Image (tube, rainbow, N blue to C red):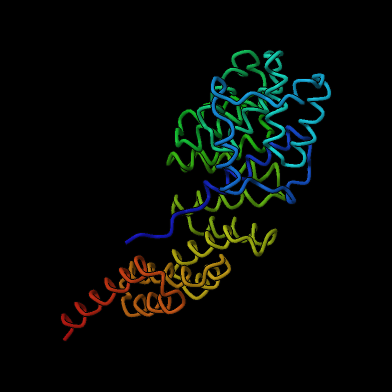
Length: 322
């Protein structure tokens, strides 16, 4: 029986990419930043092939001096116009390939657009010449994290954490990489540091709660997530993980309430039904799966299959008792 997949890794990538981009554009208010939509990312990926195949720049760009191009590129980056920013940075790099600060920004834009091979190439080139650039290590670590190359991601984030032990973002990303690699105890260590360094940030608390959950330390997970809830009571990812913890503690009504805050009522009933099923409470499970189907009839393949299994188990129990 399939449970709802944990959404932490996607959240991590979005938060971390926004943080990396803020280093490029020097924007501090992350809560108002907009990430690429799937169609925007696809358009950007289609527009920019790897370096050797990229389209020639427009003639008006070639006429501008490098300092003007860079100013326009930075302005475009601040406005989240990644296409224009990339065009201007690439035009500068054509004649100034040693501008490693710009190559870092190009690598981040490739990363945002889903061009992992191009991003890795650019960031590796930067680090070959500027190994002290911690933000480039973080960006390359994110490429590896996205590609599920967890040992390589851990290696990059460890470099940063070693150089700057109080860099909360590196500790957070290192903790998430260790979490995805199944190294729960080590993940908890670094995520606790990240949460202490940035007590107003909810993301480390969500990841820490998930780490405790996977480590089956449910009370500690509950403590972390409740603390996060005080910071962001409507955060859907936090409420999803809170529901998972409360269900693991068999506090089903509270778990259902948390799942409902996670944003999908049909999925909430399916989630709680899975936990009832695992406990052998097949009647309650069947009612939850039936409710999920009533709320969203198109929720067929998962909820319908779960309902069928629950009814079969309930029939078997009744036959055995009868």
